[in-house]
Amino acid sequence: MVSIKKKQGFFTLTENWFEYKFNWTDLIQPVCYRGLRNADHLKFLGIKKYTKTVVLPLDEPIEIIHANFSTSNKRSIKKSEAIGVACYFNNDRKEFIDFYNVFAKEKNLTPLDKSRAGEYEGESWKCSYAVLNGEVLVAHSYIEDIHAGIVRSMESGSMRLNSNYNPRDIADANKLLHYFDINYFKERGLKFYDFGGWDDLPGLLDFKKSFGGYPIEVHNFFSYTYALKEKLKEMALGIKKVNPVVARNTTTTES
Image 1 (spheres, rainbow, N blue to C red):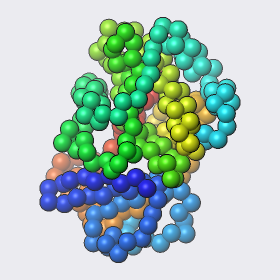
Image 2: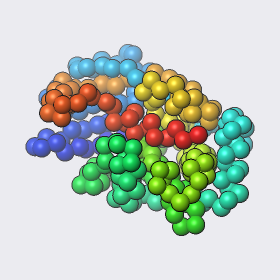
Image 3: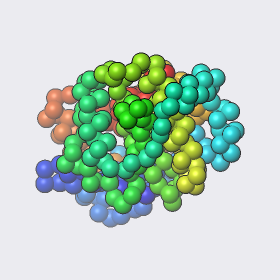
Image 4: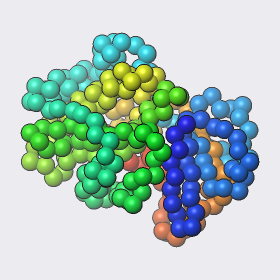
């Protein structure tokens, strides 16, 4: 299980991923459980919602996984490698936030709060970069649950709107970085690469499926106090509630 602690005023909201364990404190504490699979039989005294996500199994050899990429993706990966794009992991969350927030401003997305850089427990948070000539072109962030065998895409950003490089090269670098990430997590023993949802955007769904992924339905459980806190926050902001994980994942569509 991956647990994320979110401070909101005097309260701490707990967001758990991939696994549900009943706890009596869930009756009064603001807590939720996301991304649960095969959870129809589970009983939860709160609110249940269903969402969809795109997953790629990692049990096949990497050569077969790559062979199942779309022709366009394979071409983009080859082109990106040819011009010298390099990929690596650096799990400094504050560094990622600095990069992502520039992108978020350009795309009119909600920025990430630096004060919440430590809300992820342990080493569950991962971040990868695609770089050309010392300039970061694309960055991806993930949560990883070794026990559950799942890694899930969380946020993604690029310099496509304000870089000296051709937007096509940055789009290609994004695909190369996905390939790099898939191979990295496969080597770490993860069983599923979860691209996240698509928020009813057909183009985003097609992009994620182009890597060989397929959509599945997952369960999400919310305690009544968690749902109330989120509703009050929504009312205070005066905006329609949008799942931030889904919204941020719409940034990975560069094709």
